[in-house]
Length: 185
Ligand code: F6R
Ligand code: ZN
Image (cartoon, rainbow, N blue to C red; front, side, top):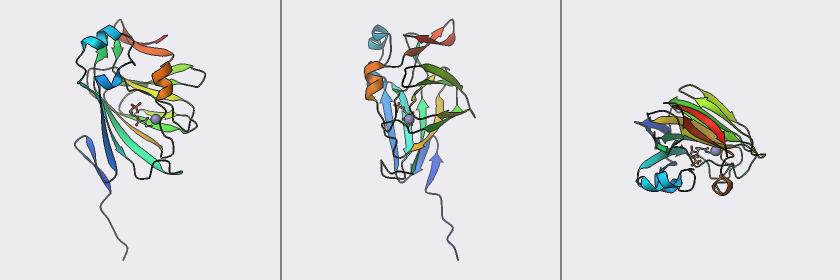
C-alpha cells in the first residue's frame, strides 16, 4: 500500500504554515533611502508596516535545481507621490529567472536590465509575469488596498540588494494626476 500524506505546506489566513517557512516584515524605516522625497519620508512614522513576505524554502539556500515560493503582502501608501514599493534586487546569480503573479489588489512590476533600461507591467489578480535572468525587479502598490502577489524562484538565485541600494532604478513610479507614471531619473 502506497502512502497518502497531508501536504507539507498550506495557507492559514494570509500566511503559509508548515516547516521551512520564513516570515519577514519590512517597516518604512527598513526602506530608508529608496524613496525620492526624503523630507516626506522623514515626516512619516518609521515603524509602520510596508510589506511582509511569507516564504517556503524547502531546500538549503544555494541548492541547484530547487525552487522557492513566497507571497508578499505590500500595504498601500505613498511617500510624497511615490507608491510604497519593495526594496528590489537583482539575483546574486544574476542569470536566475523568476515568476511573479498577482493575487489581490493592484500594483506594478518595475523591471530594469543590466543596461539600466526600465519598463513596467500592470499586476492584478491572475496576471502572470516572467522575470528573465539579468533583470532587477521591484513591486509597487498602486491601489488603496492590500496588494499581494506570489513568487517562485530558484533556490540558487540569491539576492543582490547592494546594486539597487547604491544606484536605485533608472526610473521611479510616481502618481501624476491620480495615475501611475514611470518617470526617468
Ligand atoms: C524573491 C523575490 C520576492 C521578493 C519579495 C520582497 O527573489 O523576488 O520574493 O524577495 O517580494 O522584495 P525584496 O526582496 O526586494 O525586498
Ligand atoms: Zn527575486
